Amino acid sequence: MRQPKVAIVCDWLTNMGGAERVVLAMHQAYPEAPIFTSVFEPSTMPAFKGLDIRTSFLQKLPAFIRRKHQLYAPLRALAFRKLDLQGYDIIISSSSAEAKAVKKRADALHICYCHTPTRYYWSHYREYLRNPGFGVLDPLVKLIAPPFIWWMRKLDKASVKGVDYFIANSTEVQKRIKKFYNRSSVVLNPGVQTSRLTPKKFIKKGNYYLVVGRQIPYKRIDLAITACNKLKKELVVIGNGSEHDKLAHLAGPTVKMLSGIDDKQIVDYFQRAKAFIFPAEEDFGIVPVEAMAAGTPVIAFARGGAQDYMTPKTGITFSRQSTSAITDAIRKFEVNKFKRPELIEHANQFSEAKFISELRALVKHFQKET
Image (cartoon, rainbow, N blue to C red; front, top):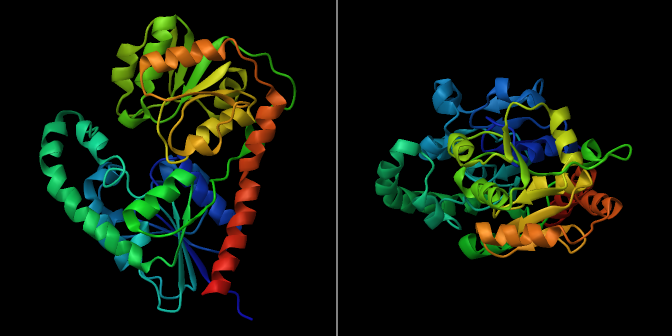
């Protein structure tokens, strides 16, 4: 029998993050499948070099506009509807925005791996409206956002009609899919490259706490900085983003801000940190699991995807996004002990190999049900 033709679709490929790593894992599961996306920046995405990437008409936009994907959501929704996927039997979309809007043949199967219903339309709309993250343009964005988002919500709801099955990346996202789209889903947590981070030999821990990630408003890295300022604890903050200058100004003498760090150095920082601080409410949150794979316990906000991987053996949780909640969690952490082998064993439950195997199994299951 002819093997079904598979296509992978994702929102954009402009900067490397958790969703982009999921797309790479999907490519490993289906190496013959082309990857369709709205825009692609090869210079910032070396991991995708040599892959069959097919872009929309938005690729013709100037580079500085392509990278600001928040600015052209309506155009992106149109771009995905115009992609030609008629030749594919199975479409797997990796989406938190418009990729799920692609059209398919009537007899084709569309499976959406949903990172979340678009945060700034649905679950975190009010938070987004308070701090859109456009700097001097924030007052204008706050003015035009409500009618714009009302319209985009209608388009977003219409787009899910073409999805046959949803896979949620966490139990929290499963609840959001039900609440906002009124659709059922199965949970498959993202795969993590655990072996890349696990130490091959014993490594002595340093005396610093660690934060790694994009420096944007909802990540709440400011809370980790103010907590460590208050306690006079060493903190290493690795990353960049729209909040970088603000965070650098906030950082006290015990806080070190780093960017442009290569992969080998980041792994070393993960392995030597005494704990990883994670103040964000994420849809899943791959980075805390990476910390565990490196043998480092986690201090995490007990909401969102963290509920799927935080246990009493992997670290400390806090229930409010506040400086005082994090300082209390750090004090609690310092009178507890965590075992590296248990952290690494727990992280391996979220391995990339397991994700690939379970994704293939789910696709076969959905094929049989169709």
